[in-house]
Amino acid sequence: MKKTLAIVLALCMIFALCACGSAAPANEEKAPAASEAPATNEAPAEGGLDALDPVTIVFATPNANANIESEYAQKWIAAVEEQSGGKITFDYTDSGALGNYEELLEGTVNGIYDLTITEPSYIETYVPEASLLSLPMLYSSYEEADWILDGEVGQWFNEKCSNAGIEVLNYFYCGFRYIISEDEITSLDTAKNVIIRSPNIQTYLDTLQMLGFKCETMSFSDAYTAMETGVISAVECPLQNLYSTGYYQLCPYLLGSRHMFSANSIVANEAFWANLAPEYKEIMLSALADITVEERTECAAREDQFLADFAEKGTTFNEFDDESKAAIVEMFSEYWTEKVATLGDEAVSMLNLIIEHKG
Image 1: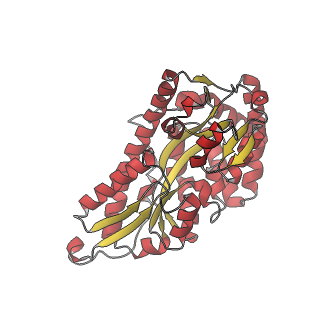
Image 2: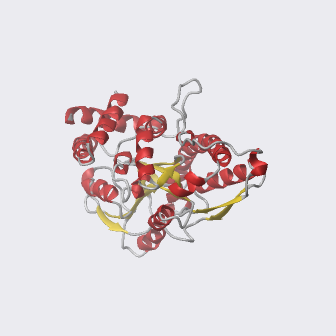
Image 3: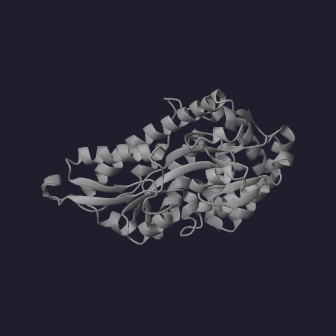
């Protein structure tokens, strides 16, 4: 099993660079979008939309307004309001004004909010199996992310979330995570004891510590000041966050570690979703399926563009050297096995499906 995982991880690291920014071929058969999955058994109301009472949906997100997932969430809102003829409206608050990821997810589970945006890693508090979708080095390309999140593995996870009071409506992509630093990092040796900002999530802490970094947990909004004042000397995040925040002004080196893949889900409170009229669900899910395809395509294109933008700012791009890559394959193949074994037989079966798909 470990040998198989090592081979798979090696292929992931080899192909990750060329895969970034690539879009699925037009003729490739794709799994149905996750946003099509939630089903409803309620009968449509007589008289259609005209017979339904208007509804206002409370939607609070932690993401900066400039982030691609926020941009496309607002496109979805506009599409739903238009297609419903104004019968569906949103009380929308972005940029973490009502709380961070953990707070807004907790509020959604408890019915304070109807919808929020979150990462699978934050769902671990309620659904431990979420750690499977957040494993380091799991995704080698955007196409592979589609296969995992929209296919059998994603549907299995979505059902687990439903049992915990959350309905997963889709997966927007934020892209592969990179590391920007004050000093050049090209190997595990040069990464050793570099102080890096990390989210306070165990999988992230495990990943960065295994790579040799010394972690300081803090919100991303506090990281820039921490870098300026010397509290940390490196930050990991998708490129959109690193570039839009201006880290190229502080850090001359960018490491293409691509150690994790960030996907953000629009999730609904289960009780809210169960009580929503089927006509409204159909409008919301149909619009979201279209918007999600657009968002993912644009995310891939922007990742390539951000790399070019960093280069234009004078940022030096590196990857881990071959010796370090071999060591990373070995350590993370063991991590996959040990981490997923604690989640039970179903999770192990899902991991095996992924490994089989990778070939």
